[in-house]
Image (cartoon, rainbow, N blue to C red; front, side):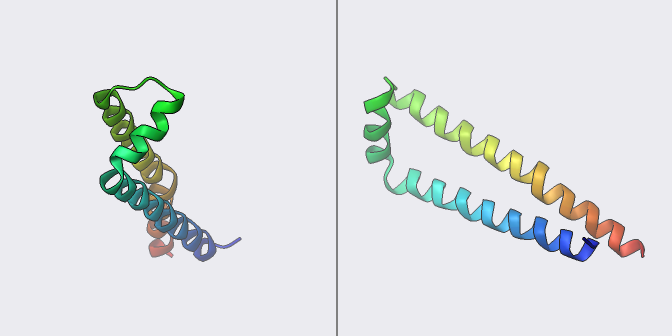
Length: 83
């Protein structure tokens, strides 16, 4: 596998994961009450705990995208520019 293919792979991973993150955020903003009701069936969550859990989940997901998709893409881009 060459560097160009790996760069495309990591860029596509980042794009797909950011799309998932945006959908998650959109669902949280547009249908927060329904999501809270759904999750409250399984777990006893206060409104505050639900908001904190969602926000923390989105933050962790965003960090994982950065670490596992964007950083390798940037590193491969720097390597490819040296050649």
